[in-house]
Amino acid sequence: MTVDEAARVPVVIVGAGPVGVTAALLLARHGIRCLVLERHQDVYPLPRAVATDDEVRRILQAAGVGEEFAAITRPANGLRLLDARHRVMAEFRRTGCGRHGYPQTSMFDQPGLERVLRDALARLPECELKGGVEVTGVGPDTTGPVRVTYRDDDGEHELWADAVLGCDGANSLTREAIGAFWEDLRFEERWTVVDVRTGADVRCWEGVDQVCDPHRPATFMRVGEDRYRWEFRLRDERETVRELVAPWLSPSYDGDFEVVRETQYTFRARVADRWRSGRVFLLGDAAHLTPPFIGQGLCSGLRDAYNLTWKLARVLRQGGDERLLDTYESERKPHARHVIRLAVAMGWAMTGGQDGAAALRRRALAVACRIPGLAELAGRDLSPALNPGPLVRRGVRRGLAGTHCPQPWVSVDGRRTRLDELLGDSFTVLTATGPGPSLTALAHGLGIRALSVTDAGDDGTLAAWMSAGRADAVLLRPDRVVMDVVPAGGHDFTSTADWAALLHTTRSPVPAERTALKSLLESTTR
Image (cartoon, rainbow, N blue to C red; front, side, top):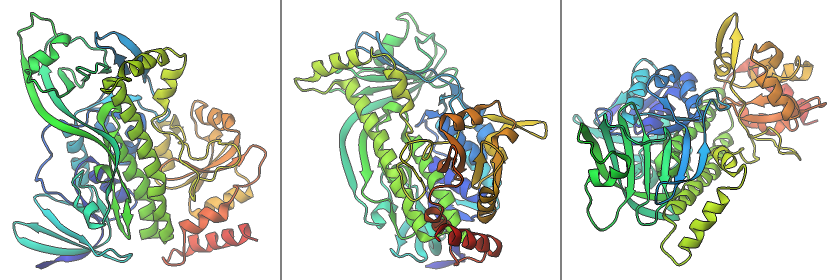
């Protein structure tokens, strides 16, 4: 076995799909070198994921590919539930820009996204992608360096990493290596997925249609100018693609009709029982499997990457406490489970099940969909606030803690840009008025900036958001989640010492920041 010349790598990422490459790009933004190992030489050429939301668009912006991705997407109207005769039962509209500054629903072609991500990766000296390799081992299971072995045309290789990210999909070797097991959330169905390119006048809503027909449940959406996707639950009899899609086409159409892909999938709902062992982590499909009915499978994986990478960078570069990494699973797993249950609920709404209560459930769904405001509420529930924890300080009122800061356009030196470009990749103290001495000291201790919303040059979105949340100041994490709040009329953050202790230790030599945080911790624990 060959020991690679660069046998010690800060981070090894197993898998170069969208989750793995996005994680690499985010780590590079924090100055972390990484090696991405992928068994395929090139991008997987066939379409898979086709939808994303505004929060994930913001994550891609943070990864440095926001503009490139915008060039290959198109906005969509949201989601409709149709009955067996294709009559509208409910609309879950997600139009216009969401709080993250992007269309609430966007359609795209996954190979296009993967090319954008890989092109960006190739431009970064901190990142290296090795294709055509098979990872053969990950371990040992310790808190120290992790041994990774892989095989390529030149033979067997070995290297050591300070951390390993398993982004290697549903059949993850990394998950097996850490001894994690699937928790079955009780949904498993066989579906056929059909991607078509045609110039036909296809009847569509410019959004996603879910056909709630127990005999032939289906999903339909327009992906691009001439690209469409249909998904159908499999039945025993075999039908041609043209027969399956006939309800959406004119009976007389005989023009161009190219089947780009027709394949079968088993849609499952599962969550790994643990996502971390020592310095080995699971992300994306290696950690959770989501039925596609609400378009959140890939989105959940990119949220994993955004949540973990800044914490890992904090530990590797700035001496953050190892316990900081425990918050990855405790924050992400409840949200992943929530999304999976929403997707399963949508799946049952579509199929109705096959038991004697199926018809009753479908009638109840039709009635529930008429309740004013229910559709709007369901559409907002894809990313609820994080649960209270070491990095989410929530008081008596729910307030802003655990939620995302909105991202309006701001003006910087006469130049219009998005808020996150102004804030950078670290923490930020955002104040309703000028920061006082204690908040200024905190910002200095963390090595971050304090910014008054009156100086942001936005359209008033930030001031209105803080006013509605009854906050005089908020502390934003690098992933733009509100970590702590100074309530209106308050003077300081609630429990500074609790989270400050996780963000820094004496293990890594960062003298100025260490001295400031040491003073801060002493003052808040007296």
